[in-house]
Length: 282
Image 1 (cartoon, rainbow, N blue to C red):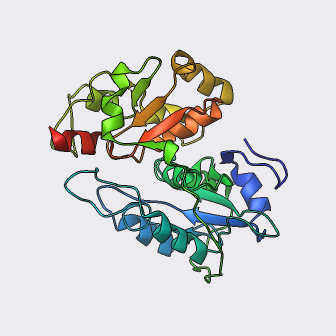
Image 2: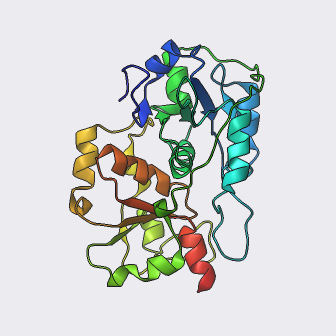
Image 3: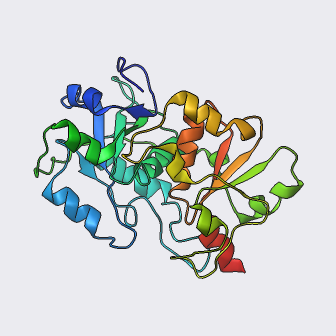
C-alpha cells in the first residue's frame, strides 16, 4: 500500500495516508458510490456526506457511454467527454507540478472505484489509486466527513487513449486460437455457471472462460488482500498473454485488473462489453 511520498504511484492508498494529504492541491478525490439496482442512490449518498474535498462521478452518467443494442450495459465513455469532466474537477494530465494524483473510493469493495482507476489508466493517466476500505473504512477510522460540495477548479486533462488496454467481441472470439491466451470471467460462481442471472437476459459464460470472482480480491470489509495473496491468487495465469477479463458489463472486471496489477501482471485487457455484449448476439 502506498504510504510514501507524492512522487510515487501505487494502486491503493490507506485512509490514514489520505487524511494526511487532504489539503494537498496535487490530489483530487472522487466519490464513485453507486447502486446498480438504485442508480440515484450514489449521488444522494454523496450529497448527504462525503470525504472532504471529494467530487462525485456517476457510473451511468460519467463513467459509461450511451447504451445501444450491442456493446453492453456500460459501454466505455467517450474519451473527450470524460476528459472534459475530469478537467472540471481540477485534474491535470501534465503541468509544472506533474499529473494530479486521483484517489477514487466507493462503498462496494472497489467495484466502481476500480472502474475509474482503469478508465484513467486507459486514458493514459497512471497517477490514480483506490482508497483501501472505501467509504466504510473511512468512517470506521473516525475521520471527518462533510456535506460541502467543493467548488470547481480548472484543470487540463488531455486523454491519450491506450487502445491496447481494451478488446472487443471479435478479439474475444479469436482467443481460443491464440496460444497462451486466457479469458477470465469475474462474476460470482453461480452466475458464471449459469445457475443465476439477475440482470442479463441470458445466463451462462463465454466458452473457454475460467472463473475468478472479483470479490476475492478484497476481504469482507472491503480491504485489499496482501500483495502475496494477490500473487498466489493469479499464479495459474501469471505467464499467460494476453489475459482478457470480463464481467457482466465491464465494471467489476476492473477490480480483477486492479488485482492483476498488484500481483505484478501487466498483460490484462478489458473486454468492455463483457457478458452483456456477448449475450446480446446470441
